[in-house]
Image 1 (cartoon, helix red, strand yellow):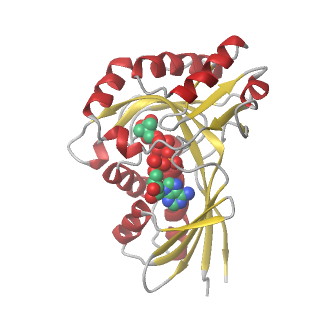
Image 2: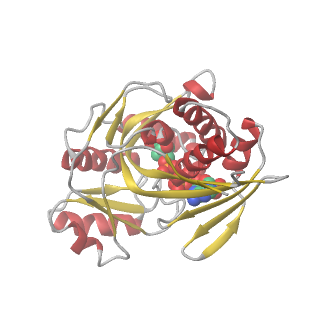
Length: 280
Ligand SMILES: Nc1ncnc2c1ncn2[C@@H]1O[C@H](COP(=O)(O)OP(=O)(O)O)[C@@H](O)[C@H]1O
Ligand SMILES: CC(C)(COP(=O)(O)O)[C@@H](O)C(=O)O
């Protein structure tokens, strides 16, 4: 009998977004653009009498993840879950969505729930919206690419391009997504800053994101310092939404960012969440 399922989901860097308020969680979300990245969350799921989640990041383990606990409950299953990631949590890399998608993808196989990938995404999206940990990340992560979401929710029209070039990112600390999504002032500035067009390529994505970040009022002093260094070096860069971090692309990006912290070299993901293995 199979006892363990392991799945992976890529993360997502949001560059710009606008909240869309629907009549229920399924129709609530955001429009906007972002990049699905090859780094994300690996989740190991085993059946258990009661659900528990262990989050492992850089050798440290933390207990609990309300969105995952909620989503497993919605599926009517109980499991012992271990998530692992290299990128920092709460830093705008869409890891809450990745953790949900990886865990639910594994749970679907482990418990033979026979959900389609869209149904898995629907449960993950609901958990994100209800816990205010994300709006458009799950919709984006359903497949890879530089993503432009033209409507809210997982069934919205989404265009994707797949550039080969890498992008680079650093984190200067967390910015809890719920704290921004719960602030009417911040949400009003964000709505007014929305650029209202899709990016043509990765450099265009960086530029549109930067214009949005500038008018959103979300740029903290330490993020500003990194962006200024990128400007001086002629490197297109912006802020990871929603985190105190910077992403940048093109020649020289890695060299500039490395002056401020550990640089993550990221590629544009080719696909969404997938099962890695089932083992006894
Ligand atoms: N790797 C992970 N494993 C399990 N839960 C996670 C993980 N990453 C985020 N979460 C959940 O999401 C919450 C943070 O959400 P958020 O600030 O949106 O992070 P991010 O910007 O990384 O998506 C965490 O408190 C936790 O409940
Ligand atoms: C920006 C955000 C609302 C949150 O993203 P994160 O902090 O990475 O969970 C995202 O879900 C979006 O709608 O674009």
